[in-house]
Length: 171
Length: 105
Image (cartoon, rainbow over all chains, first blue to last red):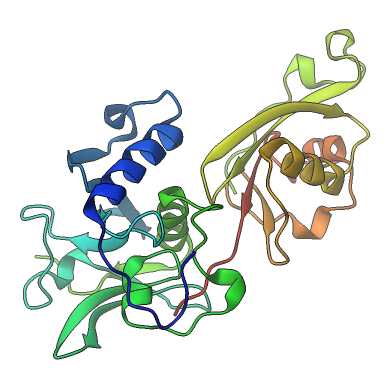
């Protein structure tokens, strides 16, 4: 089980195996294609999401990376759909502006060590634990009771209820 | 809230085929597990919620929330009969989801 103030350590072999098992469970007989998801490698899941505002549907691409899984949740980042990577210098327009509440926030440039990262600030993302964010016991990631479906659900919910447009205006 | 679906003939009270029962579906957001089971028409929302934990093999957490499939909180309706909620269009179907709060922000 995850714990506060401990830095997650990658375990690529275990992560790939657990991701494969949980992906099959979550799909429950469905397929990646029908969900609109993509699995470019054994550690990555790409999930398209939309933010709705004023009659518009804004497209976003959520990238989940499974490196410390299942002991810790997957890494979650909104990425440039062309590069499938994120740089705070050029890709903020691909990050949604989410009105923060007590459960969720998105920081496009969160100071971490000597640099900055994109932080989807929720106890169901790996980055939340990497930055040693404060968290109550009942919200700690529990690998016996949660899988990456919890991560997608929390982000999808925030996109539905708290979405305010892209962080940077799109051309 | 999503548009309500009309009440299907087999959802009507007293319809002979259902033996006084209605089929409900619960999704547990933490895992994506889905369970479908039948409950008595007289069952309250809280009763079927508790049954859902048994079906899912999960334990209720203090800040778990019961929602409609559209993500609308139903915490204010727990003592009401599920069929009455459907009739009064508080719920658009007998599909529900259980969500656990997260920490963040």
